Length: 570
Image (cartoon, rainbow, N blue to C red; front, side, top):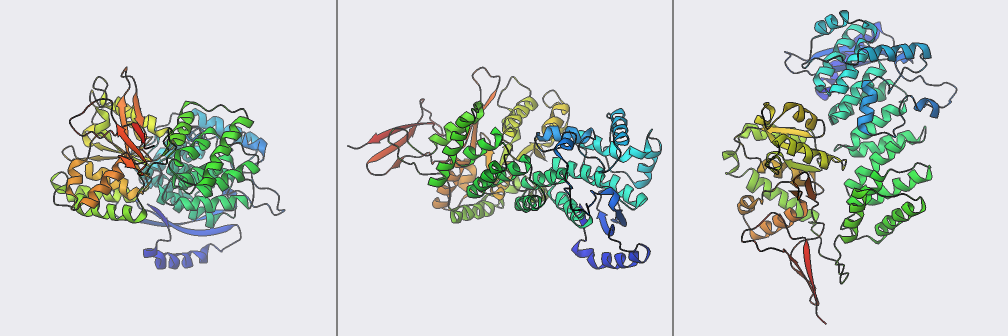
């Protein structure tokens, strides 16, 4: 973990700062900071001090002119109109950021030099400062060694501790970590959704630099919007507004996270603000409105969504297939197309949800049966893993999904499932087994590495059963979180001690379990979203709505019916 002035060491750090100020006077363009990196496999935490000069940050314009990049410059750097994969590519090629005010000729030569070393392979484990120094000495262009290495780390998605060890080495030798290096490190943190590290880098930058440039804000807003600290992204958006017009990416990151947390009024407000600034929304963000509005009974929200459809008409925009599917599902969500009666929704009240979560954690997860299938140590490690990365949008039973198409490699099935779900721009957690990390005919490691770039993974022991893991991660992530498994979870429902809680569990399950199956030809995996309305027999007295299946089944299935019979008493 990287932290700035931790509470436990704050007094010692302040004392250190007091001593250092004797040697380094505090000037307007120089500030002193104490930072520590806590690296694994080291005997103790290394504390060091470094100072920063204004030459490594975006300079403050004393005349008050616009310090943000102009439109012309943004074509070279980054305006926020590309996807994250493209952003990562730009960072890894050294294109995203440049030292402000650097001569153009020098900048071009640096970019060309970086291209020469595009294939540099970063180390797999953190190195000591002496080891980094040896690598730097043997490098053909030592002056750009750290730039090239961090670019490669972003490209290879290196472990975050490797990057921390490099920055520790730089700070020890130079007494300074340059702005560009902090940005590249931030990009790696965002890429890996390391919320704590993202917040720490922001704290450091906020104290060191009077103003940040647009690329830094893009990364910070994107990173925080995909975390449990998502409201900080809204605060950053307000910061950007004070000095310039936020980018489309800034707005869309905030709109999506507000929608995901069902704060549709906030999402709509940001959407209209975005249109007022002549920023053209992507189909991706328009689709999010329909995806997260299903089942919500709000007349004003309905007007907003119809307004989006009119926006498509007025601008001659043609939705793609997945967007059309979202619109169709929104129209069908919770309303009978025959009698227009609103069906009961599958949402639990806050009180019901909190009670259910507590009972599942008490009776199912911490019940006497759990540790026959895992160990207390393993489950504690999993809890720590989850708490550090909350919230998730979808939790996937990886082993369960991997068996969906018997003729395909298991890793290939998992790859297709994760790839399909990741298109919705959601945070995924895959629960796996340790044997998935061993190269075999079913688990090709090059494919597994590619999947791990799209989702968080937790690998349990091979003998462990992961139902408790699945329930814990889903319930801790909040009411919006869904889960993917073909397991009916009957054993866990049976562990609940009273009929009311069992009823709530089944209702929660019906509204949160994503159904999947192989396509007819076996080439694809089809996913059907969880219902926003409750799939049980419903009546108002004059009308009856009865869900049914085309074929008779003796046994219960985790798949609920998709067809309804509407009966009306005349």
